[in-house]
Image (tube, rainbow, N blue to C red; front, top):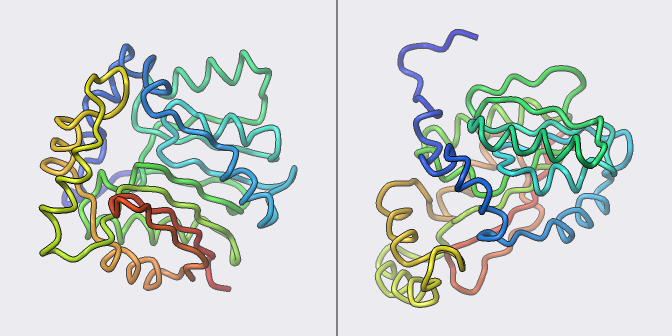
Length: 234
């Protein structure tokens, strides 16, 4: 679909490292994401072999591939060709025939077929400024069936502006010393300087405005990362 000239180019906001095949190959070791807790949560909310799941910003497909045996259809969406190539190869090696890969982003993915029952997002919304976050979340609500579930993880700041320096210094102090061991202080600082994480008290009204009820929210003790379970209002 042709986009208006005023649209942001989200392909330019993906983070250059995510386009690098060498970085992609090491991403899972660096991020150390375990999908089991989220899978159990979504199953408790009705995910089954008929469900349609869209993983927006799927990355290397850790969640999409783990969910595929439990769903009828899984769509792994990402702006990075390198990430999608990795997901496709992994799905093939695992014999998964219900995983589709789509090169698109939050503002360009056009859902086809039955409405999604579940949308999963981890560490992708912060690539968009707040105006575009609202725009993207409205699009996500539109692709979900009434009563459908959005599970959202991201760097979200659950503190007041005048606490910023103290919270950030505490966060940075726990950074990994080497990139191969995890996220370093330099990487955290680059995130804050060049990406678009927002405050929880800005994000939550947006979620409600576009048609979601926030059923559960969990802010980590460091107050820089949050997880949301949201249900589309009927």
